[in-house]
Length: 142
Image (cartoon, rainbow, N blue to C red; front, side, top):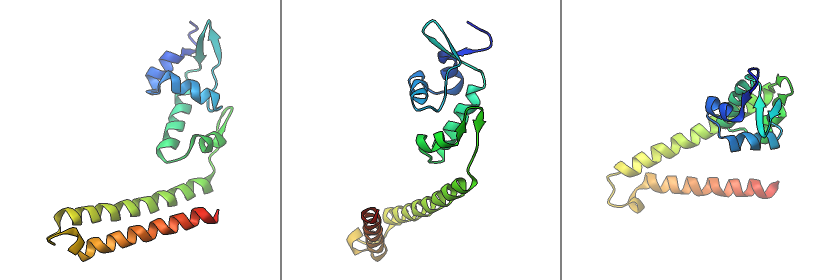
């Protein structure tokens, strides 16, 4: 095997990404192998940085299609507005999750005889239902 390139198995080992996922990333145009030795795909060692960027994007909540939009043949070009929008989206998600956590902790420690008799828990239920209605209306407006 060429010393300049690493096999798909070695890429999987170094990146923690399964070979099947690497092949899928190739199908989606996120990565490309440099050459082949027999049936083995060979990649440049720099592929691990590109894979780290893909993983980072996924952890931030970007879809593979969104990630593909920022990747270029020789690197990547990040859209600062898109990053800002995603950060705002994450902030909203953090707020929702914090409210949910607080509500669950209250429900777990509530002194009311039943949750049906707890005014705070009932407010949480109403709020949750209102949010679901808003989400559904937003989907219908699209």
